[in-house]
Image 1: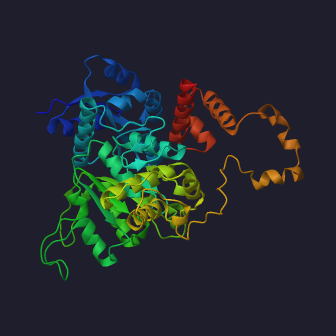
Image 2: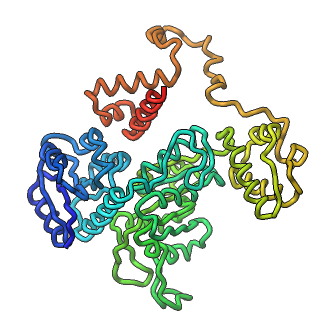
Length: 479
C-alpha cells in the first residue's frame, strides 16, 4: 500500500467521498476538508507530509485560484490538481499558469483521477528528493539547457522553462524557423521529473496526412493496406515522458479532433482497435506560424488551441538578441573547428559588429550553417570581414532597439489634442517601466491585493502580473 497522503479540498460531501474512495482503492491515504481555512491548518502541520492536493475552485470561504495565488509556497512543495466545472475552464488554465500540476473537468473519471494523481505524486517526490534538478536561471546566464545567450529576452525564456518544468501543463512554443523550438521543448523535458522517460518528437508537417494518424496513435495489423504488423504510435511510445508536436498548425482538421479527444480523456485508440488505452504523457507543441491567425482563418480548431496553449512561450528571433549573436557564433566556431582539427580565434570586434548588423532570416540555424562553412573552408586561426558571404550586408545599419527608436505616433504628437493628457503630467520624467509598475500596483491595491482580479481589470492573465512583480522584486533586491 502507498503511504502517499492526498488532501482533498471539496465542499460537496458526495464528491469528496467518491474521490477519496477511488484514490484509497488505488493505495493512497486521503484527508478531506470542505473549506480553505481547514486546508491551511492541514497543510500547516509539521507532520502533514501531503504528496498532492485535489482542489475545487468554488469553496464556501473563498476562491481556489485566489488561494493558490496567495499561497505560492504550496505549489513549490506539493503538486496541486484543480477540479473544475466546464464553466471555469479559463480559471483552471490560470491555475496551471500559476504552477498547478494539472486540471480535470467534473465529473472526474475514476481511472483518470488515479492516473493523474500518480503523476502528481511522482513530481512531488522528485522535487523533494532532488531540489537542484531543475537548471538554475541566474541573472546573466550564458549557457542554459542547450541555449546560449544572456540577453533579456532569453533570460525570460530561461525563467519560463524553469517555472513550467515540474508541471504537466501543455506548453505551446512559438517562434520563427531556426529559433530553437525543439531545444526549448527538450529543455523543459530534461528539467522536470520526466527527464528519465522518453522524449518523442513528431514533425506534423513532414509526415503525409494519411500516415500521421498512424504515426501518432499507432495501428493494428491489417487495419489498412501496408499495416503488416501491430505498431505503437508516438503517443504511447512517449508514455511517462513528453511528446513534442512540432509544426502543430500543419495538422489537418480531422486529426485535430482526435488529438483534442486524447487531451481530454488521456486515452488513445489505435487505428483498427475497438478499445482505448490509458496513456500518461505530457504534450509540448510548437509552430512558426501565428496560431491565433490560424484559428481566425479556420485552419486550426479554437478549442484545441486553448487546450494546448495553457503555457505559451515565445522564442525571440536572433536579430533581437544583440550580443548573443557573437556568443553563439563563437560557440559554433570552436565546436566545428575542433571537428575539423583546426584552431580559430574568437570573432574580431569588427566581424562581431557585422554579425550583429545582419537580419538573420534563418535565425540560429542560419548562423550555425555559416560557422560550419567557415570552419570547413578557411584555415584559421583568424576570420575577418572579407570572409563573410555576400548575404551578410556589412553596410546595413545596426537595427534600432525598440527602446531607442521613436514611435511614429510621437512624431505626430503636435497634431493631437493635448487636453486629454493634462491629468498625466505627474508621470512626466518616469520611464515606461515605472509607469507600468505604478498602474499594476494601483490595480492590485484597488482589488484588495488580489492579482487575479487585478489581472482581469487590466485585461491580462495573472501569470503576466506574477512575472512582472517577480522581475521588479529581483531588480529591487539587486539595487
